[in-house]
Length: 330
Image (cartoon, rainbow, N blue to C red; front, side, top):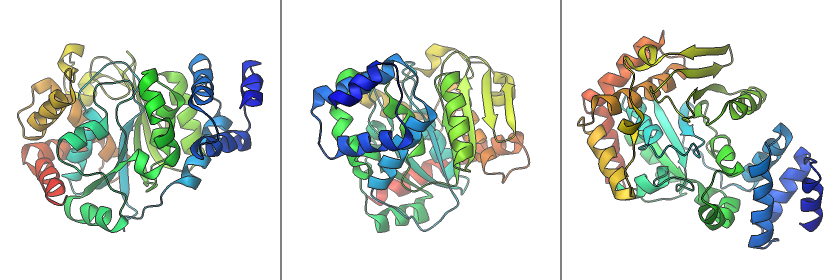
């Protein structure tokens, strides 16, 4: 590791092969925590390159526990996290609203490293049992339209660095990897990013991987549609800027999106919203993200139709039914 760190400290970057090799070695326990922390810290001081990101991705997927849920027509909705906004679990709620429309969802997530409650924190609090049993996960997708993949159960390398990430408490390159290493390899992806540099990198990577994707970035720094300001939307077809009124019918304020001070707070907010008791602003933000995810699938003629499908899923109780069925299956 000393040689690698010296190389990186000289402002050089790793090739795809070198990046893959380092992450394979990290996951096999070759380096101590101080060496790994130093390595992670390099990427807090400079941007990751496409080759490095692809190499890290290659390593994680090669080592990953493979999972086949029996259907290929699946979507994942995920933010990179690390935007420092401490919002409630918008992406995870959007997943259930999408599932409520009949679209199959395989959500990949982890504990919050730089926020109070990541997707794994809230799912665990709601009564979901983490597993990597393919048969059980396939059953969940079949019966509840959704399953959850807790990243450390599928990625040995993430298990190794988990405690270090939590101790650092800041955004690392592992935040960037999460959305592109879902072991189920979903056909469609809605990815929220915290800055425009990251949006550019993902755009390149997802085109390289030939995915059906949409990348989101709220221009005030959220890694999802926040409706607090305009959102940059990036797809295969190009880039556009959407206003809060186009996406969610209204503009909202940052304090209306807060996720509380504990995992219990986050779970209470989650249950309120999915049971139809959310505030107008909370609902609007979740519906906008769900609608954009549905739009990615190409099954709706336009965004407005997708938005109406999301509204129906929430208001009819279909989204909540998916959650209840999922928890009953545990």
